Length: 282
Ligand SMILES: Nc1ncnc2c1ncn2[C@@H]1O[C@H](COP(=O)(O)OP(=O)(O)OP(=O)(O)O)[C@@H](O)[C@H]1O
Ligand SMILES: O=P(O)(O)OC[C@H]1O[C@H](OP(=O)(O)OP(=O)(O)O)[C@H](O)[C@@H]1O
Ligand SMILES: [Mg+2]
Image (tube, rainbow, N blue to C red; front, side, top):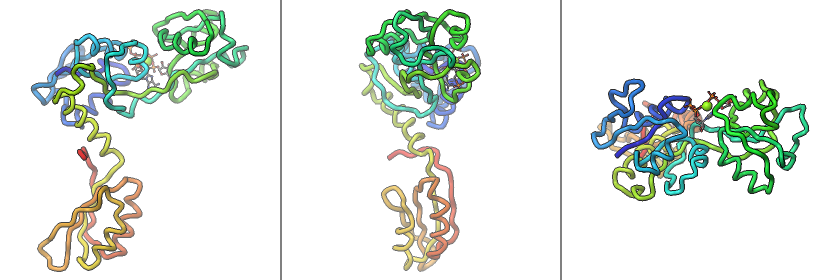
């Protein structure tokens, strides 16, 4: 089974880190290499440009891919199925125009020029509005084009908004929201290995923002302890050597830990241990 992942750019590191946390870390993945092994002998990683990954998956060069939703949409491939929203690489594709210009709404661009690295998505967007600008494809530094009279507006990625601000461009409309997705070719989406990869990655997402709590409590206060712990499906209660004492384990939302620990102490808990969770398979 082959997973296509971004070979460089801002998605490269977080993608490899996620695979690592999911237990399918890349081994001997030296820079500029096309393929790398993972700790699972049946899984190979293929490094590709973020924009090429949907095509690689659709064509069979890889079975599953990890890249931005914007790239999946731009590639226009339709025989891939999204398996997971991996919740990073969050950004928006927006229509933006010079702040001091006269483009106030998308309709103002009829017959005008829009520069973008995303011509397919941009054309679909304007078609949906019944507006017909000329679309000029560029391969980078899109924000410059309105200032050199190449375009009246752009469709480009924004997250913090810094790049638009620096280039004195204002958002006219949102075209789409994006984040990184795991997707598979339709004909392999139900293969056991693909399912295993999906489960492994989901387990990392499910563990994020959660903590594992372990503590000892007097047996006769167990009901109070259970009331305090908003654990997933209730806590696990274990016997310990000390008579009259039980050990309690529970998964707790990170933001609830502070209050839970204080409340647990109030109901007689001791030896409270809070740990990170790497993966959580439900
Ligand atoms: N500012 C940003 N904030 C969040 N996510 C972003 C941002 N810019 C890009 N992305 C996401 O990362 C993907 C890849 O962008 P990146 O800039 O890493 O690669 P690229 O510019 O396509 O690569 P290359 O250097 O090969 O041209 C985008 O398609 C988008 O999904
Ligand atoms: O809203 P912001 O936080 O400013 O982010 C937006 C910028 O981020 C991306 O560029 P990137 O940094 O990936 O550089 P690139 O043009 O080399 O791809 C994107 O193309 C925008 O230019
Ligand atoms: Mg970029």
